[in-house]
Length: 555
Image (cartoon, rainbow, N blue to C red; front, side, top):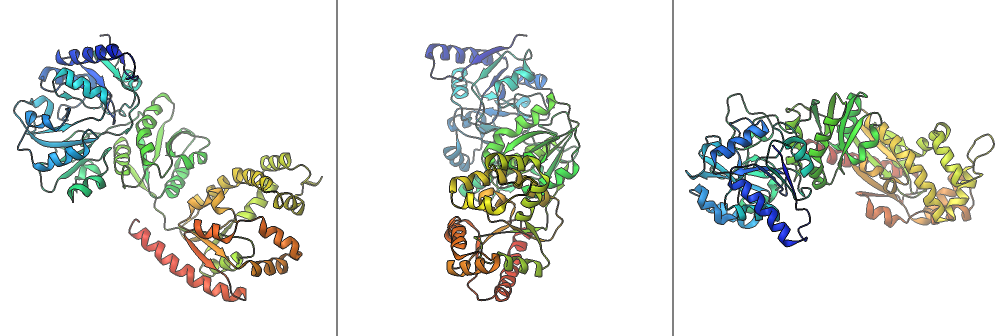
């Protein structure tokens, strides 16, 4: 069979040509053929949802188990009475708010819908996709389109037409290319035949958005675990292992830094890794697919299937995947990853507490760090790491020497005063030095942090915020002090003149910068270091209790 490719990515092109392609796709569907269609979630493999023979062909093309029901795609709530009965008012409330969009509702089915579409259930799944091309095809065809994801059953879903052709070329009559999917995970499925409504599959519409509109929703156990043998799924994606590449997948949950550290302890050179962008550098020997920034769940949703799918073209023997938390789209992303893994999950949550201390020189960080040590904590001194790297990391030394010629002696020793005079008086030169240092220092500190056992730690770094090391911390603390006190402390501590002390202070950001950027402030206007240390011990004790309470409750 030849699969016809319809390119409708440019919907602003020749209107007659667009209409002809839509009519051709609709005609195939009316006549019992199969056409892959674009939606905002994933590509669907469409057939006439009222034609038992056409629906059977979906199962054959996908290799899909017959007891896995399909979703009917319609153009709006006005179609519901045609295919559903005893429709509760809440269905229309949800449709007005979230259709077109990634919400599928489970309702009691009308006799016009065949058993083949519903897998013999007395309910039917219905949704209105938010894609202009597919809505036009449904209107032109005049029929509801039954459409599961357009991939071979068990494989990762398709988010581009090219993904569809990889799985379905020669098995179906047509593929309509409407561009890459904007959501990237399938629709949220909500069962409205029970009270309270029940979430059967998390998807592109977050649970929190639904609950804000209609109140409490129960979450089916299939969202977080496997159905028992013999249990019949009420909706697509509930029972079977889905979304899986050929290599076995292991999902690692927990905070991003903890899950990244756990994966580093387990990977081999033949492992594949799916991780957040911030942790890609931790896996130099592995094939890595970046899921997106740890805080950007929309990007993660758009990339998750592509990340799983592309491993099939590689030689990896296993795949480890970082998993987002369950808030917002994270519930759907995590569900897809866990199903790809057959719910093989490793929990990597740590009882490690990391405080990030920063602030200007002379503010009293040394005394604050002694308070951390008095509480049994350990210090990660970024300045010490930097100087160790100056001795050991030739690439960093070369980069500094290239940008600042003459700051190293013939014996290879750094002249700190010479470098300081260069950068403290010229802010652009300081920025150049920081760029070099951050490039080498941050990965080194991150690697050491991820290997730490449970306990209390403090990262000591003047440039904690600018370097990005603050993301490793449970709390960031600005150590501040009055300027005149800082001048006197620096002079006494370093044996330098008042002029040079003020020059160093003027080259740094003011306290207000750290105060506004950090989670907490610890101000040091006390006369002696011992007095400030006592104050700091009490401050950190209280902060530790707060962080531990948050970790216990998963905040």
